[in-house]
Image 1: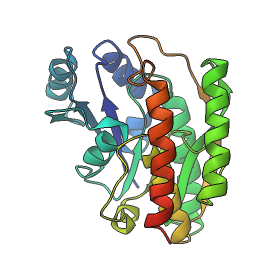
Image 2 (image 1 turned 180 degrees about the vertical axis):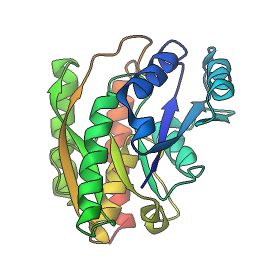
Image 3 (image 1 turned 120 degrees about the vertical axis):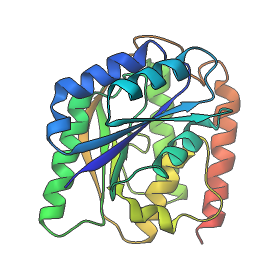
Amino acid sequence: MDFSLVVPLWNEEKNVPLLVRDLVASGLLQNGLSQVILVNNGSTDRTGAVVDDLAQQNSWIRGIHLPENLNYGGGVYEGLKHCRTDIVAYIPGDLQVSAGDLLKVWERYRAACAQRQNRVMVKGRRTVREDGWNTRVVSVIYTVLANILLGVRVKDVNGLPKMFHKDLLNFLPGTKMKTFVFDAQLLLTARKNRWPVHEVPVAFHARRQGVSSWSRKRVNVYRTTLEQMFQLKRLYP
């Protein structure tokens, strides 16, 4: 068994080499990880050049360059389309999700497959968080709303990594969420098609370098997120 990892990147030129170093140090390349898709999601810094250098130096890395930023969900989805393995996963490129926790999710996924549950999603649940209290409060409220409005039945909607069989993408409707609501859409798709969802305790680390793509537009993000949750509810009767 092996899997591909998608990493969406927006202005992460300083973080990408550290991410690759963490993946190498984790031992995942000898334990199932066969491909890493680095998605340069319309970056305006040197992220694209760094991605090309890393892909040239490592045969297991593939760089994808998007001419404009497609937001978080759009970047993840574009990367997933280029995965060559049946099992796929994704994490952000800001180092807030560790390679060690990706290994934990992979081990849980393999355990599920050993019980013949290949149609399953395994995801992280952030039990240790180093982000601000305001972000944590918003995350809890968002998860509660997603459980009430969409019935995803999880403890942490945006908890990462997320790992699943690529067949899940075939059940997505034509309209795909390009924001952070893409996480909720995948979970809702899994639930509607009766795929079990397992949550694994993980840590959410503080950002080391760069600036979050949504930190300066929180109000707009919150409003858009709520609108898209109601849109999802209509898409999945």
